[in-house]
Image (cartoon, rainbow, N blue to C red; front, side, top):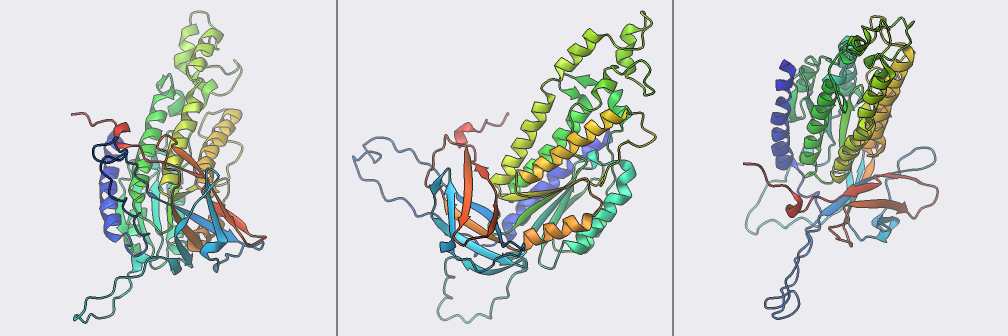
Length: 448
């Protein structure tokens, strides 16, 4: 299919994203590097002539923290001493703290700026917009957006432009399908509106799934499209990891995922008097016997082959959220279908119970992406403006705390985080965990 070649366009966006972010990443907003280790002593353990030294690189760990009172108001005047950060239950030393209100840095625990060279008179430096603004990456999962909802999705993105993006915010957009969107990071809303006009939904219809080719992990085309989406988002998150001390949000627009949709229809396991079509491939096995229902033994074997498909989806979502947490990126998932009814489109021949199961699984996948990264899932609601206002508030007022882990154990990949504040009666939101980068020895060499 032609759309598969368009997925390569995401690679161009990711390359530009990496260059753009590295060029515009704030220098003064980053914490000082970890102190260099002392020179080794000859013949001492770990020194020249002694035992070998094993070096472990400890990176700065940053986490966004939202602190609000009982009325939901942001508390902007907390100091470093008011916070306690725990990693796996061990109290950490906070090495950097940035306070952002209204999308602007108002206070920061940062190293002092270097003095100007003597004998050179320079004009006052003009503040750069990209130092304190927010970063948004919009992911258009057009392979999981209904074609009939194209106009609705475009209107949704126009709402994003009007109600979410403010002056000083940097944003980009990428798709994984035929919309062929690959917009580099920019401040120009005109570019955003140009990309919105290209959004076109291309989700598989239920009858295409039912009558399509299935493998051990479910419908082949369904799995392939999901893999393209996850790979595109994963690569984007890796590039966002290099930016520190700025609020980074991924707006994930998709209908969600279900690796085993419409299983009974695909296997021809509906009652013989069902008014809904069944998979002719499954029914053809019983043509000779004159029955209109698939052989129960065949159905049991086919369902058994897909037994672990749901577990595969959970693993894929876990890997994606783990990558987001490592990059300190919050995912805000948006289901453009809005409030879904009890039935599918009247043109689709799908049994209501199967349709509801499909909706439930796909919505749950969107909730997982958001909840596991500290974001919000805007699903099963028609008031998108309400959800956008919440995203705007959560990305405008926050703290960024940074520390160097006291437990640099390379064998403990997943680290649990907990943030506490000393003031009573305050609500605190933060990411619950992060994962260490793979060691160089763990990265498989590239194939020649």
